[in-house]
Every structure is written in structure tokens, then in C-alpha cells.
Amino acid sequence: MLLRLYNPMSILSSSMFTQIPRQFYKCPLPLFTHSVQPHISTFPRHFTLSFYSNNAHTSNTEAPDDLQLHLSNSKQSPLKPGLYLVGTPIGNLEDITLSEFVDAFRALRVLKSADVILSEDTRHSGKLLHYYNIKTPLLSYHKFNESQRAQVVLRKLQDGEIVALISDAGTPGISDPGMELAKLCADKNIPVVPIPGPSAVVTALSASGLPTNEFTFVGFLPKHSSSRRERLILSANESATQIFFIPPHKLCQFLEEAAAIFGKTRQCVMAREMTKVHEEFWHGTINEAKQAFLAHQPKGEITFLIEGKSISTEESPSESQLENELRELISEGHSLSMAVKLVASGKLMKRKAIYSLALRKFGGQVESEDD
Image 1 (tube, rainbow, N blue to C red):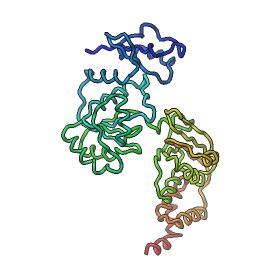
Image 2: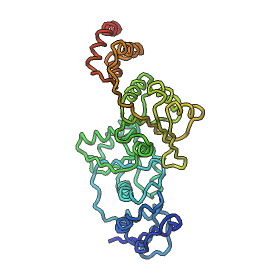
Image 3: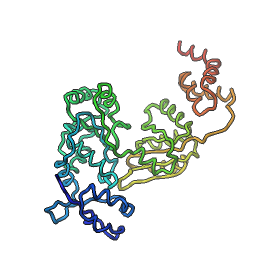
């Protein structure tokens, strides 16, 4: 049985926090993690465990090499064949804290044990694997080859191979390739195993200061302006916090459209480069965001959050108000049913009543246009 001793005190300065009791200086990792739990509040947010063997007397601060040895000597049961969805760091490769070490170790064990790793960008993922000294072959798997690769991967899984899927950052399948493959495996009764990991959605929400009890993850908005407007109108009428992924070069466009649909006074948060050196959380109204970011375009990955609509006790809108809203949407090219859906979102009235009004006022107009 492998017995490796861990001495975190070798690289933790006692000036940074209260010293850990001496009995915890060297002990097997499972005992250490259990015993040191009451002292966790004294730890810095991120630190590295320094690993020692029975015969070694000099510290090695290169954690990946020791993890590799620990992985290679692991006596845990072999992994079962199937598709493993492995979450990876959203920015900082050292996002393996003490409280997350068990899940992180499991992720590394899966990546080492897999027959192949599906990667969104093999060059990007190669850096992660190199950091942890993992030699498993990489196979590109991204939105442009997803459909072609699916059948190749399916055959590997049906042959009993272990396939791990990772994205460039975060959890696979969440605005990243993986959703269709997971569905295909589920349809074929092939095990799909999630390995917990970081997510930009939850990371940004937890630190945003906006309500977290209910939220809608929208992700990337559609490219076409009409579809994008439809999605923003639906979001603007929801009471839950709305979460978007915005490419930096699209931020100004997004703020212009959001201000027109959400209103200028809605509170929002821009989370940028989370877990990295230049991490930033900006807070303010949508109008203040326009003024702040029209002057300069921020760099890096952006997660943008907007507070939900306040629950209103207003009376139902008048028929003339509904008619005007429907007319505007239909004139913009929306179908009758979509116009009704957009007007009904956030209203106290039932959609059926608004649809009856739409048919009465615009049914003939829409039919003649279709002809």
C-alpha cells in the first residue's frame, strides 16, 4: 500500500496565517485533509501542497510530478468504460484548493486513465496536460467537427474504451461542445459520467451580489439581430437574474441593445478574466456600463449578469397598449405567434387572451403577407 507523506508547512509562511498544529506536519493525505478541516479558515485562498516520500528529505514544489506518481500508484478500482465529462479550470491552472482536492484528483485520474481525451483546442488543452504530466492522446472535438467526430467516438465507446471530454475552460456541454455527444450516448445506453469542476456561470453569480436564488443562463446570444432581440425581450421580462457570455468585441453592441430593452437603470455586473491575474468584477447600471465600456473595450472572457425584473402588481395593460406592442413586433418581421409570445412575457394576462386579440387585429394582415 502506498504511503506518501505531505508537508504543506514547507511552502506556507507562518506569517500568512496561524501555524497548523505540529501533529499535522507530516501525515497521509486523507488523514491530513480530515484532521486539518477545523484550521481551514487560516489558509490563504490558494496554496500548493508540497509532497514528501518516506525516503526524501528535500521538498519538491512541482506538484504535477508528485501527482503523476501518486496517480500511477493509485490502488483505486479501474475506471469503467464510458464518456467522462471532465471540468477544467476556467483560467487559473492552480485552481485545486484543499477543499476541492478530491474532485480535482478524480479529474486528473480520469484524464490519465482515459484511452483518448476529446479536446476543443488541442494546443490549449496540451498546456493543461503538460502541467500535470499527463500523456493521454488528444483528439480535437469542437463545434466545426462535432457531427463527424461523434460516430468515431461512439465506436470507441462501444468497443469499451474510456473517453474523456474537456473544453477549453469550465464544464463541457455548457455553451461548449459536448451536449450532442452526451445525448447520443444516453440514447445508446452508454454511461455518461460527470466529473465536477469549475463553471464561469456559478463563479460569476456567486460573487456578483445579484440574487442567486433563481437565475437563467442564456449563454451566447444569437448572431442575427431579430433573434437576438427576441431573446433579450424574453430575458428582460423574467424576474430571475440573467447570465450571458459576451465576446469582448460584442460588448458595446450588447450594451446598446440591452439598454433599449431592459432599460437604463437595471443593475448589472461584468465579470472578466475570472480566476486570472486581471480578474475584474464591475458593478453598476446598464447605462453606467455603456458609459464605462464605450470608451474602452475590455479584454478577456466576459460573463455579464443583469438583475431580474421586479415583480409588478400593476393592472393588466389596456387593449390599445397590447395592440401597439403587437403592431411594432409584426412590423419588424416577427410572426404572429412570436409577437404574441414576446408581448405575453412578463404580462399578467394569459397568452390565450393576447393571441385572440392578435388574431382579431392582425390575423388578416399576416395571412395576406403569407400569400
